[in-house]
Length: 216
Image 1 (tube, rainbow, N blue to C red):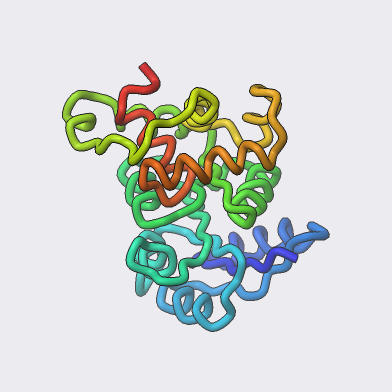
Image 2 (tube, helix red, strand yellow):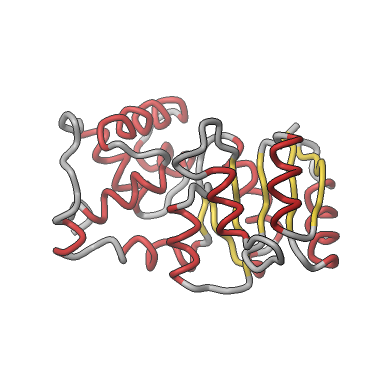
């Protein structure tokens, strides 16, 4: 079972998410809270597999909660999916920089919500399709590329294929189908690339691909 914590200041939203997720055979909602402080406390207490966080909450906003639960300085980070009404690039950048494994708009629909939870649990990442490519393209440009460090060792041709597919927003399953690889092979390549480019997750791998000019 994938254990999920929901944090949103609107009770109707929490109820809706709970109904959607509890209806799945492989997902269990272990808590729902209405503010950021309670989200951090409950998450550290219960150690859910995935935390589903709204951005605008009293106490601490979802971006700060994400940083405290999944940020670079966290020794044992939790998986976080940020869900918001607001399609703002600043929010997306901050959420992913703070360690989020996914970013969804609330109108994305139940199927994408469920897939984002499952993706985060398996170490994948999912960003709403309507913001994925627009977001990643922000990492392009000469000024961004000047700050990109070269990989610790060269990427193989197959690793480059996987990186390019991930940077286009494809999931591991879609990458496998496109490149005629098994799911485990895709994961192996991504893990190798993470070590070579110093990325923490597939979103950072994709960002590296755009910053380095690989997607030109």
